[in-house]
Image (cartoon, rainbow, N blue to C red):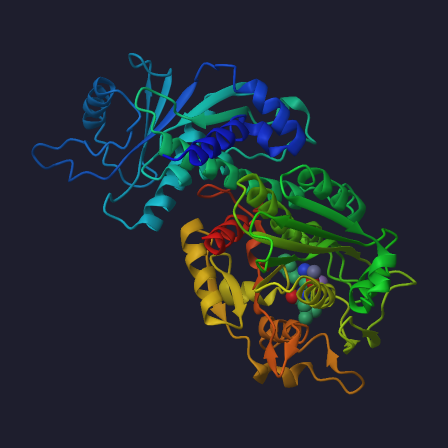
Length: 535
Ligand code: BES
Ligand code: MN
Ligand code: ZN
């Protein structure tokens, strides 16, 4: 291994050490992690995995495909014997809890990893589910207390690290201590066979999972506690001390100077001032074009004058998930010090009705000079993104621009919560997005970005109308955004992808490695996209 790679492993190991603390403030993380690394905590529980074995009824059955690779041979043999008696097959989600085994932590949770010959992406997903299953079974032993859990590589160390973070997230800081979840700290299982490559991958995974948890926390936070002013300040606190990272928080005057009439028209109805956060990460070569990320930061979407029905309106505190994902992915990109240049633009505003609010039928002029008839004030996301996309493409000249937004309810009708919708103007960029989604397990399906939808957003009074009717609601939103991707000789200046993540935003019930609540999806896919471009 090269010196720089070892140094990188050591640094990441230091940052990713402190379990839950890494979910908090970056500065606090960095200082407390240094201290925590020196404290050897007793391990309360250990999660290991085993692949599916031949049938239990077959002669010579032994659950020998034990992935608990970090354990000494004697312990593995002992565990195999117990598992055979317990008729353990190794199927996904199958779980056995073993207690007080010689030389091992008091609780060992063995979970099934499914088929050993599955492809890498499937094995990673099995590892995530297994880590969550094991963590949940250990956690059930603890109430109102602290517990330290360690994880085996589970056949896919990166995925094990991701799920160690994801499956131990809880948003309970506003509850009385007695009704909070047990606080779990987590780590890679350090043992005799500790493999530096595995440990490195696990810690990278832990950082990626922690980034998604940050996005969840931003989205779970009620809108009165996360206004544009507070959100932008928190983004600054989180990112500004990371290496090669600059953060600028702009206000209304800056947006007005840049003639962002579409963005500003959304903020008019609110008493909370709008903010526009710009992040520049220069981990790549100075002359390299950046990747650009744009995130929808509507901290609360009431619908404005075209007000939403009250059922489930509370979920619209999560209408800043695109912003949360972009900020959290930037945290991971800078923490992992990926060799790449990335810029991020995040317009932040509330969408509220008031005497000053934009009214249906009003006309606004976007930064690129196009006029828009605001037919429905609830189609506000595309208005703020119109200016953010045009600004980012012209000011930073990225090779590719990805916008992330909880844009349309219609994408949930089309794809549900399994896939996000990707509207992409370039086949190569689509391939990167598709592959990255398969790696993270948080996947995208390609949708049409086609000018044949344009007639639906024609206006009698302006260049464009901000809604295109019920039919193809996600596709007309996408083609609206495309109007703000700068062109030269009829060709787009950048590779452009609009990711509609509305249907990924929230979960009603817990399942797999994500509990109910805001999901922070697709933070890990965005990190994988950045890694793909960094290669
Ligand atoms: N923020 C919503 C979309 C949304 C819906 C996000 C459900 C998450 C969950 C967006 O601003 C919106 O209101 N879209 C309208 C567009 C319509 C007015 C054309 C919608 O989907 O109903
Ligand atoms: Mn809306
Ligand atoms: Zn919205």
